[in-house]
Image (cartoon, rainbow, N blue to C red; front, side, top):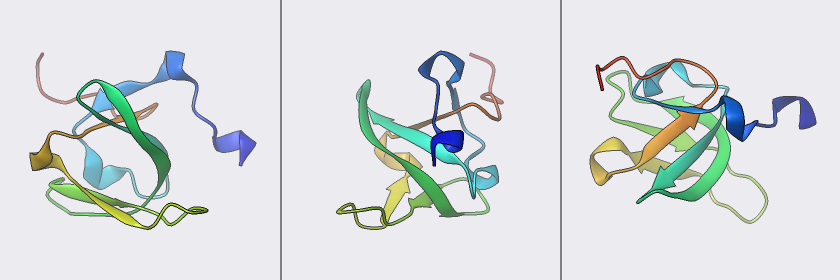
Length: 81
């Protein structure tokens, strides 16, 4: 899994959650790291995604409306900031 590790320097926030299936991401909440993991499913409207089961961490739904941010090396935010 080392080949899929994230370099913090190359990460950026994205709202393109529907395109992240199969990617390793960081999920942040209130400016801090909440969880890191593999996206195994996503809502087609980018309203949420599922982070895969890994070790003691259960498969978890991450809801965009709850204030989570998803950081990845792919797909920069499409909204003008």
